[in-house]
Image 1 (cartoon, each protein chain N blue to C red):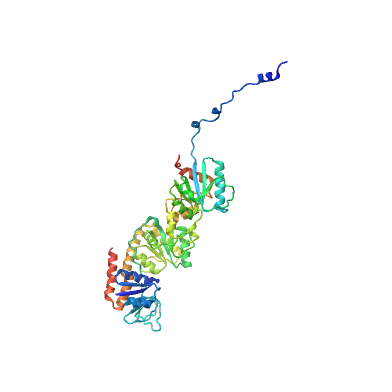
Image 2: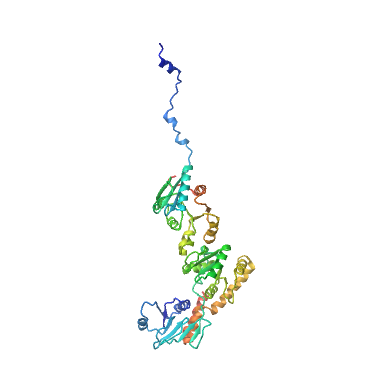
Amino acid sequence: MPNSTTEHNKNIELVEPASPVELVKPTEQIEPFTIYKFGIMVNFLDLSQRGFHIVKQLNKIVDSDYRFSPIVFYKEYAKSVDVNRFCALLEKEAWGYDGIVIATDLETAETLINCPCPQKKFFYVWDLEWLYSTYHHQYLKNIYLSDIELIARNKDHADIIKKCWKAPRYTMDNFGAETLKQIVQENYTGGRNE
Amino acid sequence: MKILVQNPKEPILEGITQVLTTIKEELIIWDGKIPLNDLLDRYNPELTICYGGIKSRPKLKLVIVGDYIPYGNINPDLICVPPHHISSDKHLVIETAANFTHHNIQYDKNYATDLFYYSHNTTPDILEYLVEIEKQYQLKIIGQHRLPIFSYLGVGTTDDIVKFMKSCKIALVFDLPSLYTYAANKIFCLTNQENDFFPVFSSVDILKEHIDSHLNDKLVLQSDNMVIEEAYDIVVHNHTYFHRTHDIFTRLGYHEQAEQCLIQLQNIIKT
């Protein structure tokens, strides 16, 4: 009686197992790409309109494009509107951070101006703050007319900022993911370790 | 001569104090913290200029600046009153004048603007003008009086104010003392105050016409330069606090000090 197991084995086409080395693509063949590092400075990443847009848009960027690595630098911890799928660090970490950093109010802009390491500094003028409180002109001038570049929220804001201080370089509506990516891509010059 | 001046909070007294510091008389400024009698005993000044009354003393000449009616045993030698005030032989009419201390500041591009307004004692009708103007033109405002409009860029130091004055194309002025100060610093003004040299507006439309022609019309610009020079001449020869102090000294019989005021003014004009 023929051995059924042997018959069965004869019908199976033997395939050489692939070696583990061949499965992994050699390092040289991986196309090089840049990780765009950028940070946003806030006082709190709280349940405000600003906090909402930051969390939503940064999550959207992280989910859709692996090349972007956002960080939020906060002064004080606060509960945010959603689960952050990006890194959040204390504001003092921005001091040695070498990516692009965007301040979001006068207070954070003042801190950012004094940080030596960020390769490019932006001030996203979320609100026309000088309208709502009495500031010294020197304080405002040292922020708005410093080497920090301005980003306006919309065209009307941009016109006002241009009249009062200097022309904003970009207009970005509510931290819009696409505009934010464009700003970072256009201004990123590589980190220290690249 | 020792001169005691009460803490200068009032514009005329401030202007006079600035002049007195330049003519090298011995000046004592009373800040109100030390009892006045102690100060008078200690320094024994010959002349006191103040805006309130103090008791008469022998060998002390008293000048009161402002709208003050003496009473009791206060017997001033001179009362400096604003124009259109009841006057007697003891009264001297003193107008506010140009502050002549900032004329060496230069243009600074960080302060450049089409229109500038220094905000102090801004009334609602002035605010209406400013709201209309900021919609159409580049206007920058600084000053102690905070305004709820986006052109208001904070409280400025004296340095900021003067740099704005020197770097603007047109200054909007709503009071006469500021007008003299701008004229002394050779700045073109548009004002709602009746005056001998600068264009006057009485409505927003007229103001806008003036601004348009000054900013865009080269011929108007040339004539504006003549207006500026003429205004400067009138003010530096008639309406500075050196002239006002000169008048006070002349009236009190201090002719040497009076002459010194005009000499100092000439020195400043030359520099």
